[in-house]
Length: 220
Image (cartoon, rainbow, N blue to C red; front, top):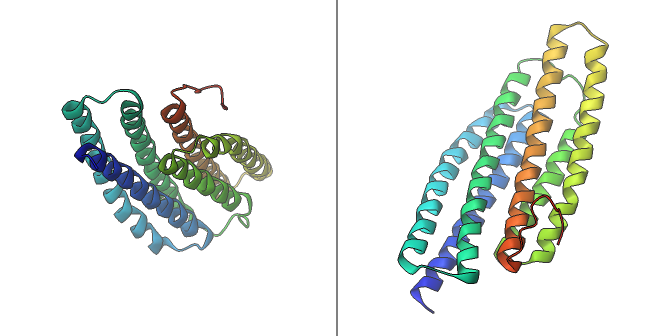
């Protein structure tokens, strides 16, 4: 195997490992809220530092591969897609941190209501992240396309969460209740953004495999 091929395989592994890290961050940040365990926040912050470092390493690797090998065609599409996927994964980590930080504020007060739809959103988003990075790992455009179809499910769950919380807000003047409802809305918004980033990765995979830009089209 050529040295270039070995480096490309190593790049792929780094991204898959980073995706696993981000999935852990998402799960832990949501668990913090559902289980009302603020100690979990430390785990998210530790993983954030690792994700940020990995982002820098991956970007540097991609730039060196382009500069030293001048790839074309499928190889160039792979590297440019890897750079965009790397950015989306780092932003996913940021959203997990946002959820975690909002959760720390929520835990200062009694639970507003049992959480049902937010964990459902988190589960749907986690599947999208898992499938999007697996589609990259396997160069599987069909799997990437299934990720695009799941984005509507996440959007609908966010709509339900917002509708439910707005009822709390319109039926109370209590500032604490209003604050908790807003925090839960912000968490739902972060989960929606996580789904958007998974969608971006899926679109990048389709471009990588087929050389076709389907952004804003949603399917191949």
